[in-house]
Image (spheres, chains in turn yellow, green):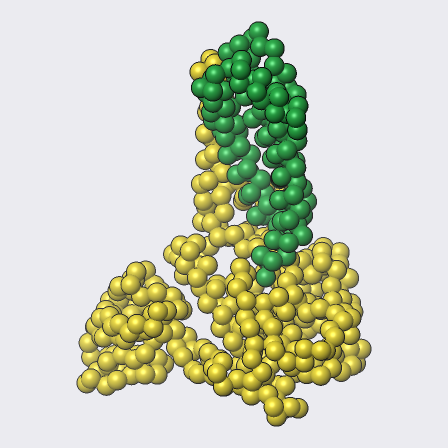
Length: 359
Length: 122
């Protein structure tokens, strides 16, 4: 040890400042986010349904993920700027006040609710042609957002279930949309929640004087009742969060439930959230997802589409991304606004795409 | 293998266990200083350019092999400074050591490419 130190001490002395500087660049986070292309992941590696086990699926159905780095280090930000494929911007809104762990938790909750929505929509669709299939679910309300001024911020966790609250004149409010109407007379009220371990707890939440709100965001979601659902399905652990795999998860589950194989040997991918009524929702990171699809040479890529005149439409963004990177979108980029559109596409791909051009 | 064991025995007959360990720790500390920087840099490049993951795993295998070389180089230097007159063929001994370690890296890397990455990216 000492011999090496004696021999290399002159080098160590010269390099110590650049070394510490480089370490700073490597570990100091900055308040930005960085989106980069990721990959595609076959849905059947996440969810499997115990049904039609003998059916041969010739193609694949994959959801698309991108890499989203919240608060990258200086170094990540710097190397990210070397590629046109990456997109960086300042963290804004509530995400700016959340820690990276909290953002991960929200992303995980998003994925969980998305998978449940995908199962419900796929089962309901498959149920139309097969009465053997049954789906049951419960409606719940969960904590999905917290403002910095929320009372008991650390004790109320993301994903905790909202049960009820005691409003004005001791009225028990169970519908979270009615909370504001029943919290007019006072500034603090008692809320009841259930945590992930199933324990019920209550907290007194105080209204913020400036905004007159409690600083808590609640959201409806449906949780599949596995006991009363047929056929059974298995959901595996996943490292990928976010709700944007919903549409493709729905399609893959639907394909597991029906007799025919709709993939017909194609490599199918796409993006888009799925709503309980079967409509497809807007997603972020369109450019990176298009690039991911392009890099993975998919045959079909579904993208949410509402109105081509709407600036933030994913399809419009996708066409813009294709133009920017010199990618020909014809034949493989398929705009859809609902799960029915996806099924219509498989009925007659050419006619469907012609219809899009004419609309 | 016989040669490898013979070289180790010869080394331990020339150097005391304490001397070999002191040289080992010195090499480990100096290599760690380089490794922290290099591996942190690579992990951040991987996180930004994840879509080239297979390429990065190959690069990581090469970098790990280089770090193993640097570690053995420091270990060798420390031993030589302690006893310049040593007759043990330390270079050959450490070369065999490196081949064994690099083979392990290669196997782990291939396992990541073909087994763990497809499993983790769900």
